[in-house]
Length: 440
Image 1 (cartoon, rainbow, N blue to C red):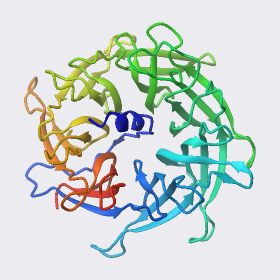
Image 2: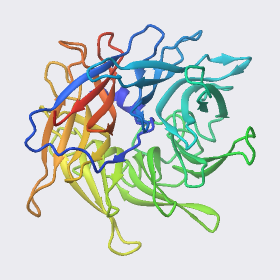
Image 3: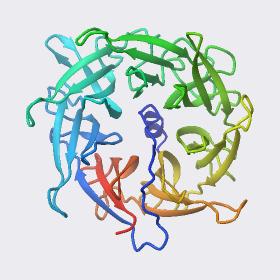
Image 4: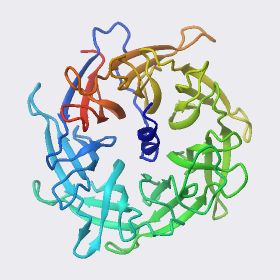
């Protein structure tokens, strides 16, 4: 199992998407998977993170290493679709991290998903670099003339103490226009049982935008995880509700040590945390990695461990919203992976189609010669109480045969196609970007 890779990637921002227009896979003659970009150690970045798509179908992402600077400190890149069907996608490096710039230490190793604001600016985080090598939060602003350089600004340096969180965070823009984030490590909590976390249990924070353009962004802690017995830790993904509450998951801690589903809500000027569900690491799974809400407010997610039998291969789960305020959330295991051709260690995102099918990925398993991960579909039962059915849509082959990648992550959907990256594999074993068409 790729335990080290999985643990490192849990820190990344994993944004989950609800898509009404995904084509239904029943009766298809596909699916068809194609690599649209191979990474290489040639200055254009390697070891990619998850993707973000804009309205024009361009794909944006980060690479942990590579670039044109004085170090292999990583990049932010854009892939533009071909002008004619079947043509080549075009990669543009928007920014190469330099480690130091005009005597100011900047970031190194961008991780997770970049996010857009309404003006087209990109925001992201690095795992390392900054004044104290604890990471930064950065902004990239597009040029006024296409083809010129994007402008990078460092919005926040994480301090050496780690008490305000460490880099490599999950970010999103809140309803108020501020940047909200979860740092999987840092803070002061130590009660996040269930894992060896050397740098405390993590924090939730807000980075408030300045009142005037060009001013200073200000960080405020919303919550420190693991500050009480049975506390949770290693927060790795969150979603805003329409009311402005923040729902999220932690990979470890809680009453059983296998992670939690929680809510952070602002009440009388103070943010309060409520643990809504404790994972047990058994049939309900453990080490949750991502989730999405359905239209009724129920939660569908992945957990990289747990499941039936002795496999410990992970599950897809549902958390049913209580019928009364303050009631208990009820967990249902929709599918337990078995490490056959279905793969193991599922990791977000999950994507809904209009028929209620779920799509996701495993970072391991699948083809027995590679064990490089899969893209899967879960279809709901046609009769109440029956089991969901699993279909492996694609099994990755690493650098073998046609070298389509190893360890997929971060699916997005745009105009009839899924897109994603693989952390490794490909022609140079440092990752790919792929497309997947279910109905050709």
